[in-house]
Length: 211
Image 1 (cartoon, rainbow, N blue to C red):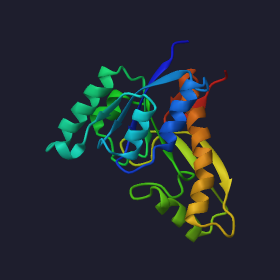
Image 2: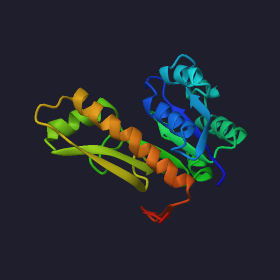
Image 3: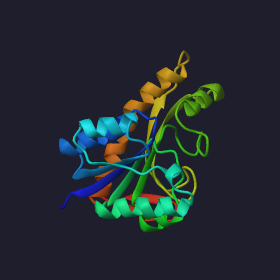
């Protein structure tokens, strides 16, 4: 089985822990793949510095450098094509991807969301906003969701979900830490299922085929 070639999109602010989890899983054999590129928006972003320290090739494509969003899409597509990416993984990347990118990589773009979609999802629901909302609402469980990316925020077909309890004395920080542990595990599992060719998308559902 040939290794899946993975490109990871990161933000200007995130720590890059999900990115690092993917890189590490590729290197120790839990993912039958290789991270061939990390693409960010600024060279001094924590995730970009972390990728560089890990010896992964990095690219900077800042949407603010493009007057027309379609030019940004074209440049991003050019980079993805140049590294021959099979799978694109979002790791803290906040921008809604343009239609040309979605169409070129339909069911080949994954995202991790720190809640159980369809709870606490959509535009503006990211990072601590999610955990604050979960605690305020009084839910007894939260977790994370890995899904394929489509034209809107967090609405693509769900691949895997993992559940964590919400404790009575939880703060957004303590809940975030507990969810993050599951994010790393769940993202890695989802990518390996993709690498094994075991994800079948049927409408808005993802079937996991037998190994």
